[in-house]
Structure formats: structure tokens, C-alpha cells
Image (cartoon, rainbow, N blue to C red):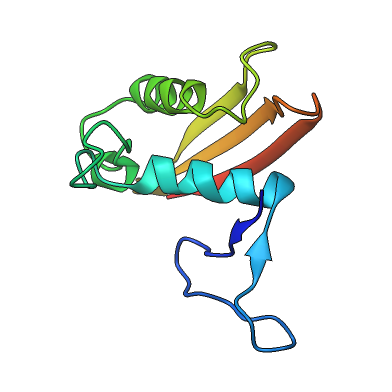
Length: 122
């Protein structure tokens, strides 16, 4: 089912006819995963368990392994991510900027079984 196109650092987008742009498939799942990872812990009044709050954790005393664990646990909560095979995560700190963490995610779509990958730099 399609959802509104809403990139994390952007605003709503419009299509060529002026209607709100919608996304589905891999782009929709990526947007949902980014929203889940970037939303502050207890950031939704009516859904206190939603969100990992990654932006608040980057640059703190958390290790790369702790960030990897948080991302893995959030991916496991997303229905569109197949539990098997497990998602492959690579988390690395930027040696030149302690406040920057790179996260590469490869997961398998629960409906199609297709491998999907994307990366996030926080």
C-alpha cells in the first residue's frame, strides 16, 4: 500500500500534476525504517514504544556495537523486513568526525524475498 513520500530531512513532495507524491515498495520501507530509527524514544505521545532515537545517541558514549544492536532490534520490529535471513548491518564511526556514524543495512523483503540495501549517515 502506498504512503506519502516524505524524506527525513525534507518536506512533502508533489508530482507533475501538483498532487502529493506517494511511494511504495522498497522506498516506502526505507522511509519507514529511517523514521523508526530517527524518531526520539517516546517521541510519539500515543506510541511510546516507537523509535530508536539514533540522532540523540550518536556522539555519546555508546559504542558502535551498541548502535548496531539498537538498529538490529528496530529492524526486527518492522513487518516488511523478513526475519530470515537476518538483516546484515555494518556500523562504523567516522575516524575524522566522532559525531558521525555510517550505517549500511541489507535486509530481505518479507513479501518478495528480494534483498534490499541502503545506508544512513548520521
